[in-house]
Image (cartoon, rainbow, N blue to C red; front, top):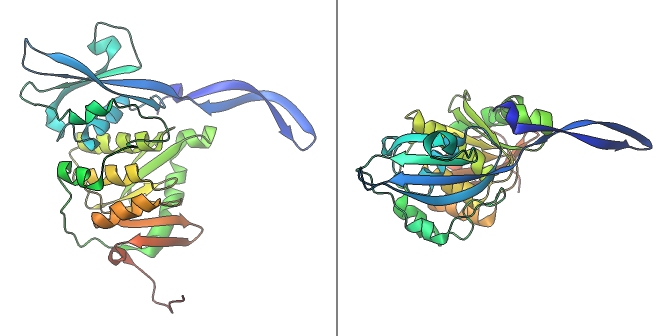
Length: 288
């Protein structure tokens, strides 16, 4: 993520009875407008589909990932170009990005009738129902024999922490990471919005031709909310681990999609909320 993700500001630091003046690093938060260009040549039209508050960086991945996880596009080759509007449009707007589709692709724009406005804390709040997600996911009925050991799970948060470049400097970003089933790190993305970080991750995976991500483990640096499980389900992810707590609706959605959901993964402990068969546990006496 570029240096533009961080802003230096003068602050007054207070520690007990000691006061000092110095610069501090904060994570940048700016709006990103996502526009979609589509239609036959000579009849192209542009539609605004979302405004999200994000940390600048990996904006093309964010835009493509958002369009995919919302079911507006189906695969990477639907897209012919993604650029900021100081390149793609007749405007000099670095906080506007335009995604151009192949002329034979008709985007699923019924969701845009909700007049998308996503904040850094809420990705798809107001989504009608879990059934609505099932109708647009290409990977909702997968079967697999994935297994990851509890010993390996315990190692993942520290690996992610070591690669959170902007968080280390600012302490102000969410992160998510993809690991393979052997615990090898595949991708990390950071953003002030947890749903943006995951859209960036899924957008990068989509561009790399990795979907479905049914041989991967998704690690979230914070809590597991409904919208994050929804986006993971859209990408075919079957194992999600979160450093924080899950919400009730996240657990319900994970159960509906047969996704293994782990929460409170830290300090050598975790809870398994759904599909525990994918976690190889140590052999010991179970307590209740």
